[in-house]
Image (cartoon, rainbow, N blue to C red; front, side, top):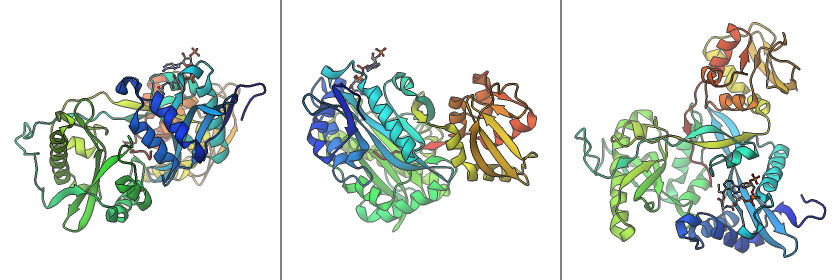
Length: 444
Ligand SMILES: CC(C)(COP(=O)(O)OP(=O)(O)OC[C@H]1O[C@@H](n2cnc3c(N)ncnc32)[C@H](O)[C@@H]1OP(=O)(O)O)[C@@H](O)C(=O)NCCC(=O)NCCS
């Protein structure tokens, strides 16, 4: 992973890098927050990732080492995890902790680290990489905004809502919210297993990961969250995950909220908001500064937002996403596509349906109208006029369709080079790619 006569060697991380990587990232990340001082929460997070995290190994880090000193001078980490896209397992790597020591910037080390990372995931069959971060920067590395993130209203810390409902405390219909303990981990994992079979894009946790979230991290780890459980008597009916402290703006962030039974949501939302207000006041009382608002980092349609008190609307943000091959990604969704067409009572009338991505093409094969295979084949020279091609869809548009970020009508509005042969193709592809809600709290 290095070039000849090169000052820098790109290599995998090692457990013994922990001190240097913690020091490097603590001194380059979130420096506007610390005023140029090392960030203890970042250092603790790096230490956690390199020691005891259930799904991360030192090898998940990539490091640029200065060969003259042997010191790591730039690095990033890819956090591998399995998401569920409407019930289909989707291996994802969330890229975090991208940083270069100031005196080594200008050498394109981030570009080189990402090239090594993408090569690794192509070999290991991790089809999707996601990252949040500097606006536009990661577009230069092959990423595109293809997942919605955030957008739920921020709820001011005032207690009774305008509708007269009291969100300030107590239980609701027998449902209460209380701090989780590690003994809740199996129930929480069970809830996630059920939600992973739902229609959203979801990031489930197993019991080990839940134990880690509840009690495994160093106290100052910036990625540490507080887990609460929604209970009805002894029955764990859901969960609520929020910040371990107030933000600089006095906001209590919420990163996840779930109910085992959708019918619990109206009462669960009331109980959860009451709990969040209570926690916000507690944080305020422990001299963290004034509690200003509850800030759900959830989609505006999330039941906690929809059924909670009114608030101040926010513009949704986006996650950057990259895939090495949108056709491989499409092939993974074969059972989902088959299911969607089946549920809509649609049968394809030809043996194949070809989607060309201006280079490679996906050949969808059908038996008796049912999808049986998705194969990557060479694309046509001119897909727009090729009689064998049913649809020509640019790779970035196909990525957005497969993840359910944009529907076909939206893609047709935005990409003039998205071309469809006829009405049946349009009807099939519209049914194949509905909008998918994003309910992801990534592993980090
Ligand atoms: C972002 C960072 C990792 C880039 O470092 P690097 O890999 O050494 O990048 P280089 O200095 O070689 O710059 C490569 C290109 O990216 C651009 N770039 C660098 N930092 C940038 C930033 N913060 N925002 C936008 N563009 C940036 C450079 O201008 C350069 O552009 P050019 O090709 O037009 O000349 C580094 O500035 C850093 O560690 N910043 C602090 C931590 C941080 O913000 N991490 C990202 C969190 S999402």
